[in-house]
Length: 297
Image (cartoon, rainbow, N blue to C red; front, side, top):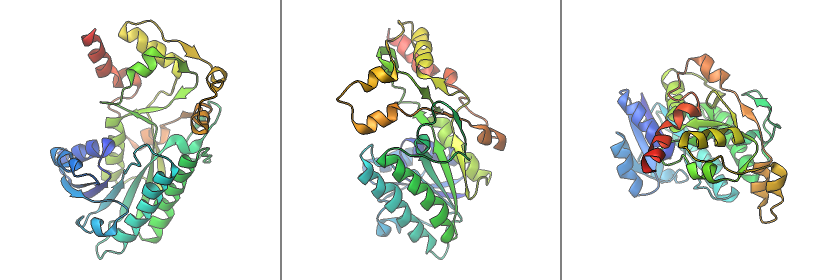
């Protein structure tokens, strides 16, 4: 299979590694010149281009599938719209008009599109209720990935990622030092986020559909923080209720909405498709980070 990964960053590079090791041909696309060598190190062919620039995308050779994993760099809703909506529309228009268009597209979204469900379970059939400008952009991008891609003759797949963690993104201090606000964590290790996308692509699954990419065990933040502290041999961190945290007048509206968002995401569909997790829960996924922390003490 020939795959183009548009936005070959944290997840894209790992996906590139997994696909090339399995014998597939991968083209990685990044905006920055510095990202080119990282793609090559991961085994892919590198193209420097912006997803919003059709001329730059012309350098990408013919492929069977596209993975749209571009990032807006943690900036606001305006930047997110330019990348996730405008960029995705540009990609679909460009590749869909080719003489040899790809027949499928995987768009990597976020479980943030669900909004708040007061700690209840959500799955692929749960109605979306984005509560911030940025998550509303993500929900719109999902529509583009499914509907606009379909109109162009490309089968779309939305992979909704839970909170990503892994090398360089364990953020131990955040939970060990606190204060930790109440609510649920839905997580997936980088290797399984990439592995899930590789799985649905190579097994030809979830065309014109959505799949939640999350591990087996959504966990209460206080429970997770106490477990992590115990594993690292340090005192349990201070805790905050939602009300205590929201009493901080300096919080932005976006942060307030994030604090008030609680849900538990199920991976029942991904499991039923046959995906085998590398790290089925944080107990396994955080082991390397805990061992590294203990080695420095």
